[in-house]
Amino acid sequence: MKELEDFLTGRIWLRDFTPFAPESVEQAIHDGFIAVRPGIMESLQCARCLNRSKNNIVSFNCAKCEGVCHYCRHCIRMGRVSSCTDLITWKEPHAITPYSHSFIWNGELTDLQQQASNELKQSLRRNEPHLVYAVCGAGKTELLFPPLHGALSEGKRICIAAPRTDVVLELSPRLKAVFPDTIIHTLYGGSPAEAGFAQLVLATTHQLYRFEQAFDLMIVDEADAFPYSYDPALAGAVKKSLKANAPVVYVSATPSKELMGSIANQSKIFRRFHGHPLPVPVFQSLWNYRKSFHSNKIPAKLDEWVKQRLAKEQPFMLFFPTIEMIGMAESLFQSIDPRIRAVHSKDPDRKEKVMALRNREIPGILTSTILERGVTIENVQVAIVGADEAIFEASALIQMAGRSGRSSAFPDGEVVFFHNGISRQMDKARDLIKFYNREGFK
Amino acid sequence: MDREETICASCRDAFEPVNGGCRICGAAGDGLCAECSRWETTAFSGAIDSGKCLYAYNAAMMDYFHQFKFLQDVILAEVFAEEMANALKKSAAAIVPIPMNSAKLKIRTFSQVDSMLDAAGVSYFHLLIKNEEVQGEKTREERMSTRELFTLNGKEVPKKIMLVDDMYTTGTTIRLAAQLLREAGAEEVKFVALIRA
Image 1 (tube, rainbow over the protein chains, first blue to last red):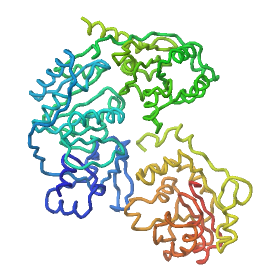
Image 2: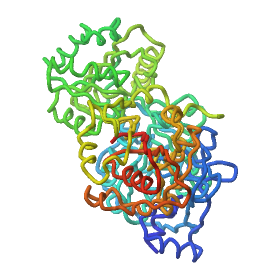
Image 3: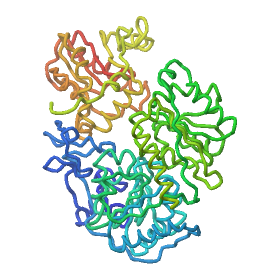
Image 4: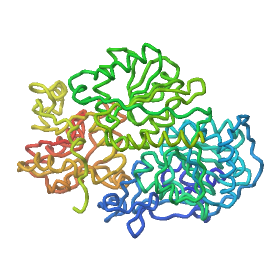
């Protein structure tokens, strides 16, 4: 019973797919602890992900309920929700006894980090939303530690959500090390079940569909990243997972105008933790690069850039606009150096390849935008092939450029935007980076 | 219908049509395939007059089938509606789906074969009842001995029958159904399956 309560508190879950015996769920329903409701509301809205578009809520003749039934295609990968599936929630709120959580961290915040950290604490004291607008490599995660510790010790249930699994997996060990006696669950598609009531939940934004009125505080990391920026339902999921009046903290290096305009409390950090300016991208024309790859040739300037990196033994990341182009380029680059590897979002060996680059086992990696954020590789040099392609918005370009010069040992990386004509987004990205460097060193 | 296309053109291009070969199961190659040749040496010889599988079980089809059958995305029945209709429209035979076990049907909430036929606008009727559903775990020999997999539902069995199934793997299911229908008076039994696994 305790296990069932720990699991289900704040969650909205498929009755038939809990990690518990059907009898114990049955008993808890009978005893009035668990509420049951249909998966699709009468208004034809999904009760889990709240989608209600005609493209996603579709009807069929159901053999189970023997009639016309609706199901939701939007969140179907989490187990199909239909009119005749039951969703369950735990009725009673969970009382968290406040106590001082262990906090093991002996790092130091820079003055700018410290100021942002204090400002965030003040917003939380007033239960108000806050935006931490900080450049790539400013040390955003660290400045969250003191306010997180305060909120945990006050007995608040907290979620840190990020759009990408890679980012969640990167955060998880760091937070577990800093808060060793706090129960922390890490949730993403296919994550293993964890025991206990988690006072701190790290989750991909998708996983929030499975929560309802669960959290007293939400931190949305990388709020500008795909798919969060692309799918408005994910913002709905954040809202649904919060208790009434619980504040949201957004953390981003590239917040949208809407986000900046909607939140009064903001902290800005335009200087990296190591005190060096952000590398400014260099524009380099690469005319007809598509045609070149199609005729199995690496464009001359790009060929030269890669050979220079190899000669200087500098690790490099080469970003491409499409998986198709990565496929064409992979064997071409491997004929320069057979150790060069390619990754994309569907590559199951992605983590291993990034690790190999970090450990200097491979000299460079060809990648899609999947590695635009959450990746830190010492002394990495960055080039973007086709920086003018529509898929590369200014925020993505800034993030990719932000991979370079992250460590204090090698603060000056090279960033090249190879293009077939300068786009507005390229200009915008470079102007913003220059602006950060001006503001950060005033 | 007031909705977008079910799948996009590039996903559609990833499916690989089968233009076989084997007179009985449609596998690639010349003449009768090795599996069907072996079947023809057993008691099931002649159970099937001819058959056709529409697509190979490649990576795209595996994704499709997973989402359709196991994630229960019923509207994906529409994806091959036209192909199913084309494969069946010339047939003068009675179209008979391979059924699901009724308990299993309640759990899955839909029969993938019936939904595909509904989407194709093809009229069909059931003659068979499926008694159990543990096919996957059995060896070929065990499957061969499973004569009671199907029983007749009592309706009159026509002379010409076109069986329809989602997937042809070993060919056991379709032969058990065909044999039973022949014993009940069918003189010609053909089949169409969406996938040749």
